Amino acid sequence: MTGSSVERALEILRNGGLVAIPTETVYGLAGDASNEAAVRRIFAAKGRPADHPLIVHVAAAEQLGEWAASIPPAATVLAQICWPGPLTLLVPKAAHVLSVVTGGRDSVGIRVPAHPLTTELLTRFGGGLAAPSANRFGRVSPTTAVHVVADLGSRVDYVLDGGACPIGVESTIVDCTTDPPQILRPGGIGTEEISALLDGTLANAHGPSRAPGMLASHYAPNATVLLANSASEAATIVGDTPGAWILDHSDDLVSYAHSLYAELRAADDRGVAVIVAVMPAAHGLGHAIRDRLSKAATR
Ligand code: TXA
Ligand code: MG
Image (tube, rainbow, N blue to C red; front, side, top):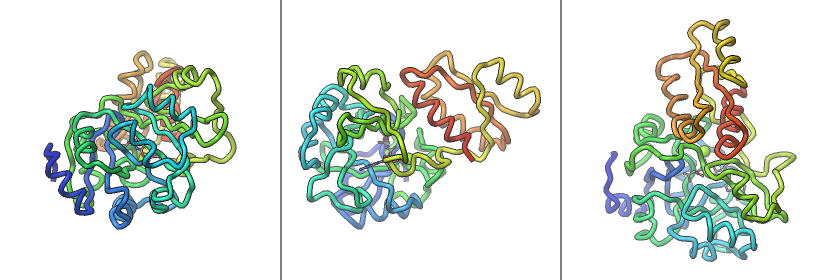
């Protein structure tokens, strides 16, 4: 069922059910982070491996201390300036945080999303909501209620419809448990902005991904995705591939991010076999778009 009743969503969550929630990035599939059965239902609904941890969403930055065993200085700075917003902070987990949420890790990802309906929901709920993106495992994230229903159907008890997600790509994940902190996933807040807030003390994640589920061919549509570095290169590729779709908003990163997943889904809905995507410049939101397109192109 889809609607915009925060009351209904609250009732379901308090009873251990699952609600898809709108955020400024993508829709999340939320359950009570302190209810082990609810969290297990999230993994089952998505078809997600148990060792891929979930982000805990809370109403306000002041709640970070309720979920963290200690708060690293970088987390204090970033939480204060960037929340509510498209940023997830990894911090050492407090003892009560369920290991089913963290995939057995000793860190937990926390985020304060910026969407009026979800802020109201979280404020009234009081606790934390564990929520991965509300797609079936391996599919692109949903940015509308219609996408959620298409992927999850009756596996979700209620879809809280907050319209299309304004940003359109997932949050930036910063691991604050290492010194210097590392960006594990580029996202809605640009790397340059985070780095500036931390006075340049930021390392890029290297070696095997420290955030499970971000190396494989994730975010992949059914269509084959080919990457081009410019509009003219894309035109050349399409010339050799009749029927291919061009995906290119590289002149406007905000609209590229906003429409990216909807366009990948639309191409699949229409049975498009090949998408030729133009890579945007590597700054601001461009990092996240390049990351998702590269993954969409991985087979
Ligand atoms: O914008 C977002 O972040 C959305 C909205 C719904 O908040 N959520 C989202 O969740 O993208 P999900 O589960 O699809 O992606 C979270 C990523 C996963 O790759 C997970 O492995 C990683 O974050 N992650 C979460 N907690 C972690 C932890 N404690 N250590 C390492 N990686 C973690
Ligand atoms: Mg996801």
